[in-house]
Image (cartoon, rainbow, N blue to C red; front, side):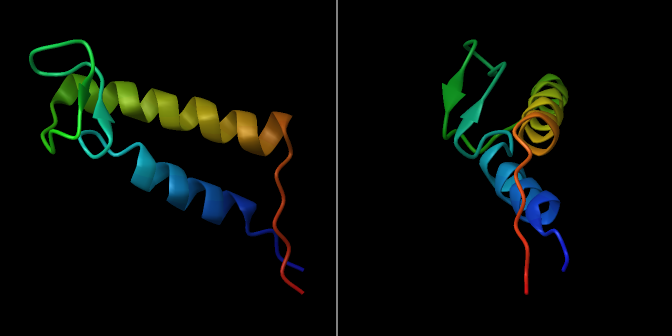
Length: 69
């Protein structure tokens, strides 16, 4: 039985936290911009940290598991 939680949760978070897709923080003109489809180096770093923190919390603290039979 393989645990697919890291793959599925990582994929979903990668899509949702792509800078500029849903939101961008820090934005080019404001602190938070929504759906502007642009990015910057600072926003890539911020979104990478957010991705790592949320993924770590979900996998280690909450212990999300998805098993295939």
